[in-house]
Image (cartoon, rainbow, N blue to C red; front, side):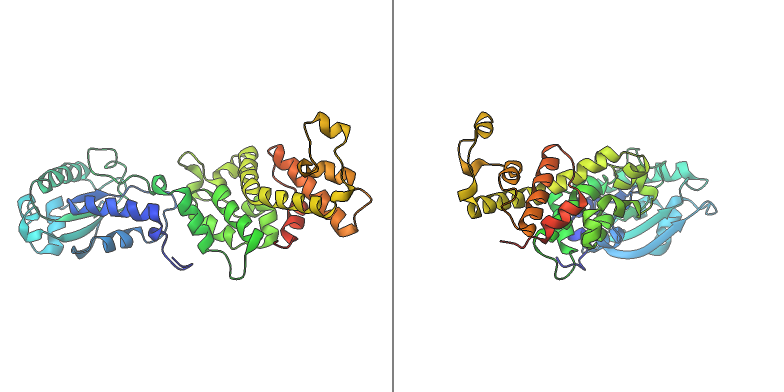
Length: 340
């Protein structure tokens, strides 16, 4: 993948499309309205159906009083009957059928006809029909209907997507933070994840302020267990949003905190000791002294830069240990530490 690649190339969504293409080849597939589906779903699905001849798109609204067979037969130039549509003459022909929500006046006729077509195509070759944004009256019936795309999006997919949208030149801890926030905070919202992965460092250290500026949209009502972050923001669930940021901070910063702890111990080992208080906490070696105790023992022994850095490290470690996201300024300080 590249930053310009389609989300439908992500492994989870690639497999989902493959399953849908197999169902479509069997004659009928309904795509229910899906919250913020990545653009290009229909085109990506049709492209997967290699060998099918795309006969174009049919739009049917409440003013169209023709029978379903007549509407489907028109672009094929065949007899407007079920037998003609489910026959070798129409085999490998694909029609994209767009029905107005609420269905035309003969909506029950569409339900009955599509059921008969699906049954006929189980037994013999014929026309393939794709129904994008299928009306609610058809979804939930005994018709082949696609599962929501979000159920096929894995955490690994979200990591790949975020990494592909990192701006040129971003690397190290800032890149790790951008990816972690995109994955944990944005969840299945790939549009938001791509934007956050490209955000400035100022936005990365204040991700909830960044989220507040995104506003809201229709997808904010829905989720698949991990709710849309905009829905959480609009609903005032700051605790859940902060937990997501905390997880991103934990993944990103904890290894760096440990690296820095060991670095301070190595550089100031001669000044460190395991005192009675530390022994009461189970510490038996200088190498096990945590950041808070290092800050206490090295107070007055550090230059301004090291002292400020150790203070920030200790505060960030304490907040993460208490399931709280880091303070923005402490995050900024740790991000500025050069990679070892």
